[in-house]
Amino acid sequence: MSGYVEAQLIILCLSVIYAYAIFLPAASGQLNLGAAGFITLGAYASGWLNNADGLGLPMGVGMVLAMLFVGAIGFAISLPILRTRGVYMVLATFAFAEVVSGIAINMEFLGGAAGMPVDAHAPVEIVVAVAVAVVLFCFYFMSTRLGLALRSIHDDENVALLFGVDVRTARVVAFTVGGMLAGLGGAVYGHHYNYVEAQTFNVLLSIYILLYVLLGGTQTAWGPLVGAVFFTVIPEIFRHVAIEMGSDWLADSRFIFFGMFIVLMMVVRPEGVVTRTMQDRCAGFLSGRRGRARRAAE
Amino acid sequence: MLLLQQLINGLMLGGLYVMVAVAFTLIIGMLNFLNFTIPALFMFAAMMMWATMTGNLPFGNDFLLSAFGEHHIWIAGVVVSIVSICIVSLIIERFTYRYMKAKYGDATEHALPLVSSLGFLIIFEHLVISQWGSDPLQIESPFGDATFTIGSLIFSIPQIISLALSLGIVFLLSHIIRRTKLGRALRSIAERPDTATLMGVDVLRIVPVVYVITGLLCAISGILFTINYTSIDAYIGDTVATVAIAGMVLGGLGNVWGAVVGGLFVGILEVFSIYIVGADFVKVPIWGLLLLILVLKPTGLFGHSAIGKGKF
Image 1 (cartoon, rainbow over the protein chains, first blue to last red):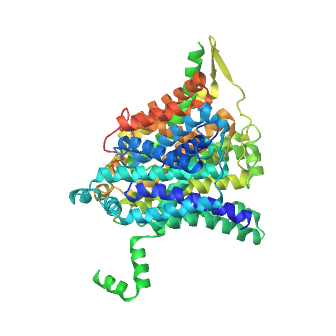
Image 2: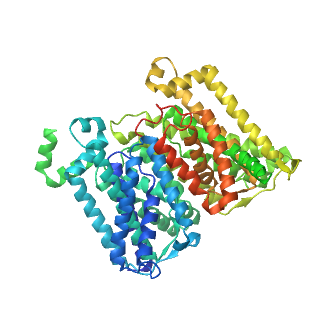
Image 3: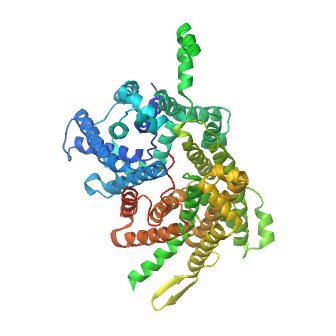
């Protein structure tokens, strides 16, 4: 594998992990614009646990502990944050991320604004393995009873409540597990690049991650995967094509077209690329008669 | 005395935040979504101002220079940036609010204008970067270092004018909302767009007006920012708008005078935090305060409890 492809693969895997972290709360209809905060926490916690001048734990142990730590923080803040709704929740998670990054920059033992080097290196195999594990876990999670509860809350909270779904618990779990996944993503990031800097996890990162999820679609577990792959691969391909065509301007301005694409997507497919109907159709197409029978039943 | 000087500087900075916060609060109050094109509009206005004043527009530089002359080129900058922002606002309206009306029967349908506006933010930032790069750009202030002093306190004249201008504009706006026919239509749309349509309000004609007003607010504050601080870059909108959002939440979503108080307050808070604990630490008090307010009293100081209750 060439260095370039490997670097892109790493970015893709990290995007997928981040996207699933935000997908879990979004699957129950909550927008979390604070991904960067959880990622920062995970990256710093795991790095500090592993570093010689921190606790000096093995990398794997450090990553698991960091994940639990971020999960605990996520649980603690989910209780007040989930009291807020709509625009207020977007703003509250956003504020949380800003507070975390502001604190991280000012912690002298974490290197302050200069950032923190991380000792142990996670090779590309580990990053890919973690990403695959996260994807499989989320598919499993969405197929459980709890996943079904999240879907029902997403579609109509009041009806879900009437049918006896414990809305509050389901939301807290989704938010906490999402936070843990984001923390894991941050830990993997820190160990792969061996360097953590709070400024890299900025508002723009949170915004992009939320866009992966909303453009991919929040209805099915395929959504974030499709969104993240789309967002990381398409601009790169576009860049290559533009350079092949000999137009540097096009290559540099690929994000302009990308933004236009987002706006048009919202006009054409406001529910994201992958919707539940589409999933059912594909399943029906693949399984032949059974699918047709099910569609007839609908 | 030094503290008083910091207070004055904070008020001046707050004056700029006020207009951006009012722009945010108008869109949330009237149309119930968080408009992320506002940072883009602010940045774009500042950039157009810079480009006109330094002769970096893609076309028409010589014409403007000959029409306005070297000394009044800043007037051309104001005109160019206001006109371009009005056009851009109308384009944005077409692709955000129009499609929000469509009902798809799903909970995330309200996320739609949010995502489109984020798309526009990406478009404008990269448009500017591909044209002028992402490094900080400087202009020379057309008014120099005009200041006057009372005792040992220093007042910068352009900043005083901009504070007065922003308060004046907000006053005008609140008058329009309270007393005019347009304002009544706006308030009815804020209450319930469908009912407003039934009562004869032409929603599709009024909503572009809201967009143009917010665009103008962003444009004026962007222009004033460029003149006062003379250094801008492609990400200036994000920096200013995030603080303005904090001010808006503090004052209460959808409340114009709340946004004024909140904007001035975060301006003062920012200046004092820099003065007391240093520039690196400035995020923590502002965003910590915001988080506390959102959790403890989400309606802010003067907010209306009905706003923002929709899912997004």
